Length: 178
Image 1 (cartoon, rainbow, N blue to C red):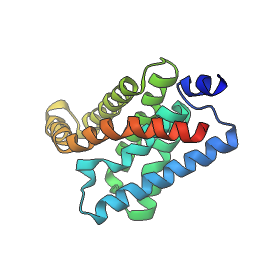
Image 2 (tube, rainbow, N blue to C red):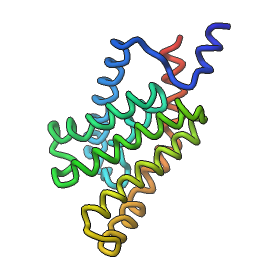
Image 3 (cartoon, one colour):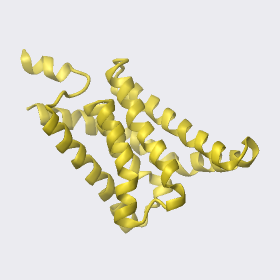
């Protein structure tokens, strides 16, 4: 009975040391995924590998972990690989932190299922990206084309996130709890 109750929790509640260790693991995976993608000529702007672990950590461990992983990932990836480009680093940091934060809040506080929380997180993070483009672009008409092109380029990555992340969260949750 206790195992069933633990699996029904929306997020996994871990003691602080384990939460930090899992967050570090997710940050490391966030750095490794883009590196692997580039080894196989899978462009980051299309497959969005940097986004996966922030979303996963928010859905699995809660909004705080999603936020921390989202904030740390772009900076650590930049230090390791020089990507994302320095000019995009602040915008991508806000976007990826938004993914983890919003998906985690939807899951933890609004108590929504994984799929709806993921979709809300994806929309919220993309809105943060668009707002950043609007602010940095100096106006709506200068920024509409980059916003639309980022959506057009990133649809394979969004589709992969919708297919892979829920399964990843469910499997990881079962492994941690068993």
